Figure 1 (tube, rainbow, N blue to C red):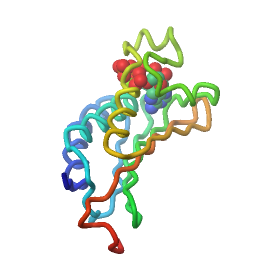
Figure 2 (figure 1 turned 135 degrees about the vertical axis):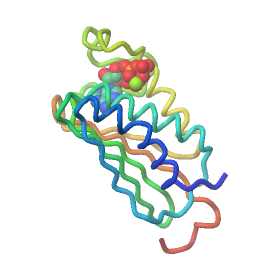
Figure 3 (figure 1 turned 30 degrees about the horizontal axis):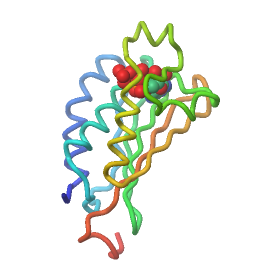
Length: 160
Ligand code: ATP
Ligand code: MG
């Protein structure tokens, strides 16, 4: 259905901001005041953002920053979660969406995940007709996850 991303992002940031700030990580939102609605399932969208923000939280040490961005072009919406954390080495980048894949098994075990989050995220993005990609300049260089969503029918073929 038709979803207003601005409201959804605001609600999630209200949830996460105290968690980040307790860890001395700054949270930024760079979203235009007005965005065309997307065609998506709001519960899935919540799950996608919660997973990406939980990762950003887990892999960004104190003093760092996490920024959520969204922008629309004529044919789609792009949403980005960028952190200044531990980064991902080039050889691991193609694999992070695989089930149970974790970059650093020992450190990862301490920080207690199972490596399933991003596989779910990719599935949820796919199921809504979008794409997801990841970029990091390397270890210690932060990480950027970018996904797309289709615009709602009423916002297509309008300049935005
Ligand atoms: P789970 O999400 O199941 O609790 P997880 O966070 O380890 O566990 P994924 O979310 O699937 O699993 O992520 C897979 C791996 O990708 C992580 O173990 C980590 O090595 C790497 N990764 C994911 N997000 C980031 C990030 N923001 N910065 C650095 N590395 C990341
Ligand atoms: Mg995770």
